[in-house]
Image (cartoon, rainbow, N blue to C red; front, side, top):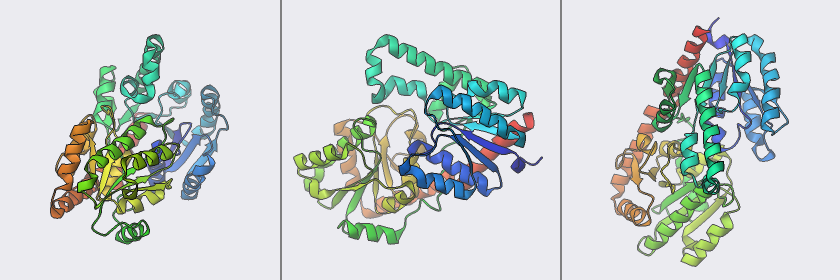
Length: 404
């Protein structure tokens, strides 16, 4: 049996939205190379039906489960996995939760498991603002941390191979006792043929929003929600606050927010309070396939979060590929992607440091900025294109298949 004759089954409750971007693209890339790709998941919400249709049109076979209850979803998915198992498959999942449910079936039917860990889940509980309320309740926090640690450790041990997207995640698994030889550090991949600067779209979008050809645009692409994405909102607020402190001396700089949510009104009020509303553009929600167009209109991409980030977002690499100068945290996985002063900039998430860094960048000669943009694009092509990353993933599939 050739490798392409073996099916790949993706399982998790949700493949839509930001966190599912990489897995959806991986499905499409595998289909293009002749793999039989299945996805066991919940139906996509209405606003993401275009993503679902795109995958179906590409050849991905969906097996939907109409239940958002964790336990019920995993029980039903075991039966769906059993029905597909006759095709000689590999199980791929970006979630630690389902692997214990499938382990007995995968052993009996000789199905290899590839676990793709895309977040340092234990460190996230320790540091992220989303868990601030939990950390105030010591017993609940310790229990939650133990459960997450157990699931991550158990799933990594049960899997035949583990893919991690940063050294920070690799370090977390090694600390949990997972053998280093089982762990594969593979950074997120992007389609550099899609995420590239489009000069035509750059002109069109700038003209539409009244942005001058020599203006510098700082973009921020994220969901803007105070209730569901406080980390992103902190970053958006600090961008406005930092910009407001330097805007009088930089009238040709614009801020462009790409994303919707319940935090938009709050941010607009901030702009009024700071007197910078004429310099800030709110685009609203944009489908992922349209994001390259807005990144093309941008020069600088803001990706500074308020805590030490153990991982990084796919948006960072997408911006680099579209020749944006990324400003990101000087911590964790950001240091693995950004070479400070060469293909982007790193900064501590402190008001004075962010202001100094932004002023330093805006004072640079246009030629210097263009060199950094080109270096960002080249780095994305050399390190993160699917042509580079996919063969490594396919070799993992080959190895785990050979062992079974």
